[in-house]
Image 1 (cartoon, rainbow, N blue to C red):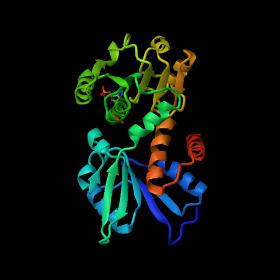
Image 2 (spheres, rainbow, N blue to C red):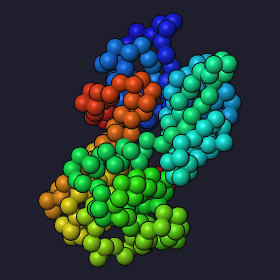
Image 3 (cartoon, rainbow, N blue to C red):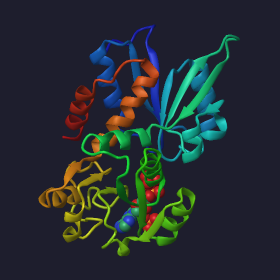
Length: 275
Ligand code: ATR
């Protein structure tokens, strides 16, 4: 990468952002395709001021992560219907209008990422899925599944949160201790259970895993979580947490550059970064 006077700017807004893998993934892709672009981490104190600054400086595309995915919405000039329905934006695109002003458009590629990751190994239309967790990630994953015609059940440690999300999405909701007989084909963990340093924790009792065809974990540190290790041993197809990150990033890359993302290059850069 050779930064010069013509380099186009991209980045990620989050706080904290120093552990984000997005700069590694996007810069590897820019370099591979010989694009004169750079992607930088940014942790603004004042989101509104930061967005004005990004517009003024000429940023072309920005990812948005925790805690700004909802907070960013009032600052946008437009938001697509899906991001509006999910209530969260993870991708901003800056466009110069004919009068010289800059418009900021918000979208959400998280649900596209989870669907694409799952679609590698299974048909989603008509499938049934159990989504563990009731936070922002669970909502995007569940929304994506419903959008392509899958049936979703939400289960969460704090059942009231699962019930609230279930009401929003018009789907069944359970406590995490009520999932023994759900009978879904796909299991997706969107909770933080199993994330380093708690690598021996598993959100589901291992003896329950053999009922699932596919198990996906959005935790990527470690890459093989206890959940995925146990699921593999039960013969399930497994999808690790890098895939959702990769596929949502690939969609951002396509939106911003018009190029198909070099997925293998991006994955290799992520795996190297994770050691
Ligand atoms: P995100 O927006 O990324 O999904 P979040 O809103 O912090 O993150 O959600 C974290 C999820 O992990 C929640 O569903 C949380 O369950 P609670 O709603 O009961 O807090 C879940 N979670 C975190 N630690 C957990 C644990 N030890 N056991 C079970 N679930 C846990």
